[in-house]
Image (cartoon, rainbow, N blue to C red; front, top):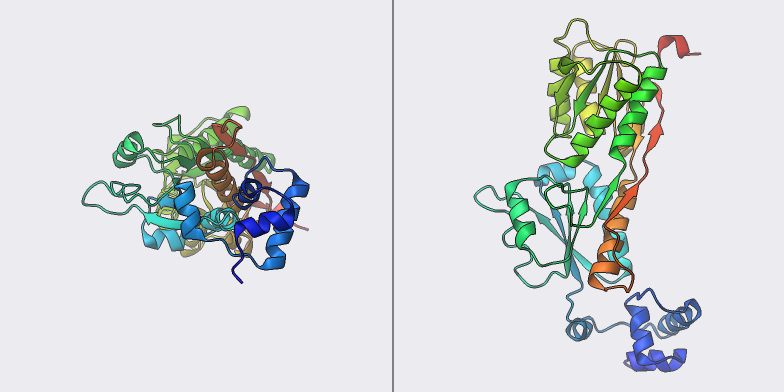
Length: 342
């Protein structure tokens, strides 16, 4: 027997429209009513008619995840799988599918086809590299869009981010409390807000301790392991060497660690090393990496909820312009001085 939505509504003792709102995860449904509808769905093993629902709602039930990175970067950096996992968790629960768009076309605007096909209800832009093509696409696009990370060229786009500045400041404060004074940093790309904010937090931490920012101790990276390796090689040309290095991502810290090992230097005996992100690899390094934890999975979940609840399903509540999640200092062995060891 084919179970219809009308039958679900009858069994739950509600109207068809109420049953439909429950299926679409509408926020304004009485919890007891919602449970009755779901109980009827479970009892009958009801399967929604997705094509019919899409036609009726004029929605495709598909959102795009736009990542302006190469496939190699996507799978080399654990940040992106964790972020996508968070987005998918929310979308699957709401019966939305996701489509991954890698904007890597180098022969023209890589964003030009996104949204033009007519089957996306909205998009989440992840890793907001602020290039002219992204700016042009955002200027012309009518799709609902949420960004993971603030896009400074388009401040009207709702975004979800972590407190990058405070996270970096916490790390520098921690290093200074441990007695480190010649603290170098490998920054993220300075053409995105996260890179600039983490650098600003580094500068604030030094200033609070009365320490100057020394340009030779600042090397720009791009969040990749390779850039961390190259940046650390540059820092190793200095005399005297830094006594600590704050890398603005764990992947850059990993690259820096490999450069130190290649130079026969030991962390933290010769140079302390810290990161930012707290990817799973950070705890597995030897010594384990002191880092700043950002809730990457939660970033993805929050971005998906913001897009679905406020921009696509059109909640009566106004969409927040920004959601900032806290960071946490994770202290491990990579910056412990010999005098502190038991």
